[in-house]
Image (cartoon, rainbow, N blue to C red; front, top):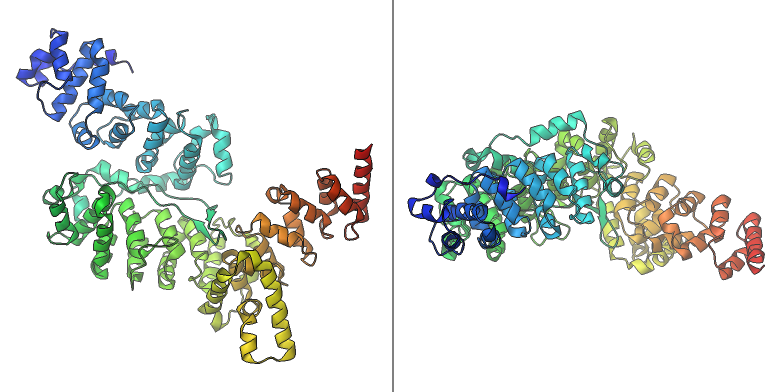
Length: 640
């Protein structure tokens, strides 16, 4: 928008001593003094004067904009709350090329929707990337998300993440169908459908929570909406992490400081950016009396806004006794705070720096039953919490059915008993929950349905032991170890060796064979490469298919299986039909040489082989005569 279209500020709105500098009749030299900061004024008046100067004299526009960008972001955030829409609109226009100031404008509740839309759509790459970090506000209004995603300056990888996150949270993205970025976005999550009428109602319910706790009582409605509509994950296709890929990766919310207006007035002085270290230490040490709910929020605010006290803030919140901390979690109305507490107190991390607090099951219950806690928070907690924590999360069945990724995460937690996991899967299947993340979900459910489990399986100590043993294996030697352990176990059984000699093989093959079907299926998904090397040969086809279809199987691991001519045909065919794996030349050769590969697949793959491998296929006695003859024909054809 052109600055000429914005109205001038009436002179009676300025202090009397300033009017002669910013009036329509004021000379350029006089107005320039204000722009250069030579006329002392307060922060809000300064911004108004810069706005006035840029609209009075075109020559002063660059200087006025430069002076505005020299105002500190924290101060600008405070000033914006007192400004009328036209001035904020001008500030947004100037800040569109500055990441820090643009973020302040975007986060301000005083900014008009139209102003923010122009800011999002006109920002350069650096600013657009910075604005994308404010996921809470972007997801609170689909128009904001649309404006940013349609900005061509936004990096494609960030656009895809935002669209994926919007799908997870059921934010309306119907505009995406007409977007030039539709193809790239669709490839990110092909199985997620657009927002339904029911999900819209849920979204509306989530983004308008009632204030909770003593701090929320005095909070502004807009701040509460922003905090409660933090990003969620609503997907059934987690990315895998780690070398073995034993668990789905669940992201965490972006943590931002809370608006000071959400705190009692007497507490705000401890949390301002320039608060002295001695004052901050009063909060960290619990020396200033305040309700536990307020203290938890204050510790969170300090942890995310002052890097130098982050560790002390976490130590302080962990020092609060469980009963009081549980009360604070139950009454907390801020999704980002709950997400932070999940990591700081409950150990919701893949390798937590801060281990879970002792006897924290009550805290898990409090967090799980808080409506403001987002799905990403509960799912991440479900991955790494204790057995008691898993039980508490599983009790909230309504939440599990509405937020199916929590079921996915619980299943991947080895501390969650297989009996409970199977019951949860059966419940999810009855209620129509998407279980596509589980390989052969239908066959698995048929296998475990009505299965009579032994008392030994209820505590899953064998499954946990098998997982630990598999993790200790060297992945490079996994296939060799699997074969050796299997033969050792069989020799021990045949020769009747003593317990000491039999103990070693039972760490591998014998231990896995002692598991029931449901535990083997979970081990196939949770376990290591050495575990899968044994389970892929299991007599039960559901177990062997779960092993080869585990998302953790790598191309190099598939190559080992492709070389094994004793595996059942279903395993070989699955590898042969995996387009990603078949892009590997060595794997393609081994698949063609495997006698259990379907003939049509082998024939199609022959055309891409080099002469040396073609000769090997033509001379092989393991492949079909049709395949070997086709290889000979190709050799003759290439030789002319």
